[in-house]
Amino acid sequence: MHKASIQTILKVIFAAAILTWLAKSDKLDLSLIGQVLENGPWALISLALLICSSFIAAFRWSLLLKTKSDKIHIKKIYPINLIGQFFSTFLPGIVTGDFLKLLYVRDCDKNLKRSFLLSTALIDRIIGLIGLLIVGGLSSIYFYSELTVLSPKVKPLISFNIMLLLGALGFVLVLFMPVRIKIHVIELIKILPIVGDKIANITETFWKIGESRAVILKSIGLSVIVHIFAITAFWSLV
Image 1 (cartoon, rainbow, N blue to C red):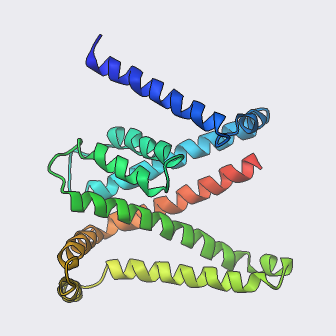
Image 2: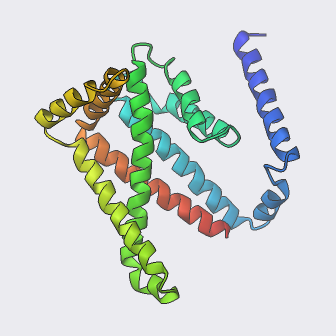
Image 3: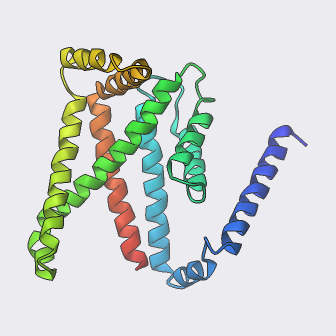
């Protein structure tokens, strides 16, 4: 038996063991899954939307990685992204899945620096958050009258959502700041004791990715689509 076949079998056994543990520890409610499947078409719609959103999220990350490497392909990134999502379901904190993704993606191109990979993972998370804030902020504005009718206490929440939207747009503008301003900021960060150089290195890599404005804007657009698909999937299940 080939080594690759043995590794695949071991991965399947490991995944089955994890799912069994999740079910027995009541972290995974299989009866609820059965109830969802009974609804047939709605379950299929939700599953299709979740698969599409997962693929789009992987494609978004691949766009960031391609700013530095031509060896990155969605065929490799998609399964890596699924591995990260799988481990994020039961490991403490969702960031742990990102660290595992970075270990796998390093095999796609050995020339990629750790600081770059860490920066892409961080930017991908931030862009995902920006997409969520855009959806939440624009929805709050569009459905303002309908939401405020529900309760007067909703008004502060709507105002907060709009402020977060403005903050997200402000962050995007920071990515597109002139180079001369970025240089001064990097120099100020380097003054910090002990961690100054490391933070400056990550920040510089962060801004270099931000120089690809088309990639950033496309990633934000994809992030908005991902959240719309996720919301629609949740609605169809409910």
